Each structure stands twice: as structure tokens, then as C-alpha cells.
Image (cartoon, each protein chain N blue to C red):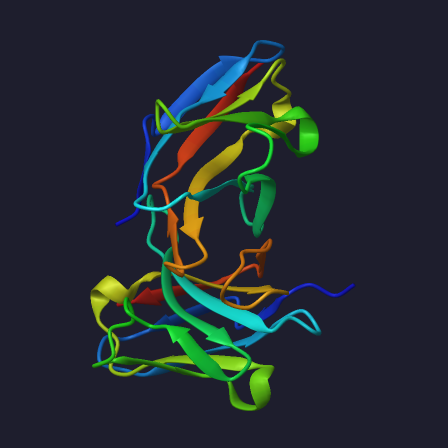
Length: 116
Length: 113
């Protein structure tokens, strides 16, 4: 079974530029999550989708971050414009069960973003 | 409100000795609790989970954790450390109704030969 795919694996940009990350979850997984993991900290949930609807985006900085999951499969996370403090690893995860129950999340390898 | 505190940022043990990684939680609801492991340059992997069944939970690679409601703790243990256990470990609290998933700050486990 293929795992969660993410691209790119690494990205370096200047502040005020824009960047986009892509995630392909495990086939059949209804729930998709984006996390931000700053060096030395635990992952912080940015947004959770069930199919193509948003379940929780309370910690997403909506003035600069946006995410979409068209057709309930792939997802993209965008930052525009980027700030220095956005330097982090962005993790995508997926799980079988939607909101109302918790099942194991399967994580992708992450995208390491460096903002100069 | 939910929160999770990992009491040690770094734990170092000798190979073959017991491992104890401490986690305390706060939750307004009956929580679900998890431990994840993150090896360098690899994705996060679920070690074990507690979801209101047996309080002693056994996971992969010989790890186990005990849910203690009176102490609001969910410490991770292993009887004998192996070099391959060196990694970052995260305690996670969640509740289905709250729909919040919160990771602890992590504990880095080092194994001495």
C-alpha cells in the first residue's frame, strides 16, 4: 500500500514570496491533515479536511495561509506571502475515519521550508 | 480545553536498560491518547493508542503505556532499550467531540552503547 506522498521535499524561498505544497493521501482515506512542525517543537495542526470539507482550521493563519482539497483527494497548502517564522516542516497526514472518531493518522515525509 | 505536557525534552539511557518517557495531559473530556515516534528524516509513526479500553496499552517494538486517570498521566515505557529506539517521541491527546488533536513538544531519546 502506497503511503502519503508529499512534494517538494525541500523548498528555500525569500520572505514575501509565495510557496505551495502538495499532498496525496492514502487511497480511500477520507480525512486529511496539514501540520506545521517548527524545529524543536511538536507538530501543530493547521487544518483538517473530511473529504473536501473543512473540519477544523482554527489554527491556520488565514491572512497568509490557504488550503484546499478539491475532489476530496489531493490537497495543496499555500503560503502567500511567506515570513521568516514560517520556516518549518509541513507535514501531511491522512486517516480512514472522519470527525466523530479517531483513527491512526499516517504521515508523509514532510516538506522542509526555509524562508530567508 | 486540552493540553499535553512532555516532562523531559531529552532522555538518555544505556542500551539494555529501561526506558521511561513521561507525559501528562489535561482534558475536559475522556481523552484518547497516543504515542508517536519520529526517526530522523522519516515520517511520524504510531506506537500505540489508548481509547478508553484497557488502561495498559501495548504497542509496537516492545513499548507500552499505562493510562492513569488519577494522575492524568500516560507514560511510555520499554523494559530494555535498543539502539534503534533512538528517536523523537511525541505524546498526543485528542477527543472526538472536541475534534482537537494536540501534540506534545516531544522527547528526544538517546541510547548509549
